[in-house]
Image (cartoon, rainbow, N blue to C red; front, side, top):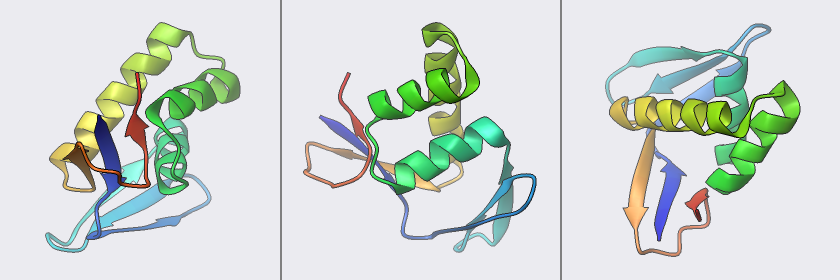
Length: 99
């Protein structure tokens, strides 16, 4: 089982229009739109990836296909930026890829 966890070097805060993420190691900032913010907050709240997809469908009226694509693209981006990590076969208490 793969787990997606928020990296310990990630810092964040919400602004009125987006969520701002900081990679504290690189010093680089990143901005998330509304759907990216929903994904991030769900990951911080220990949601499974399946639960995150359901949030996107219910909150934003996305189709299952669009929600899956948005989720994958956002997770891939967060991984490349060092803001989340994949942990294989561990019982990490954060977002799980349970599909």
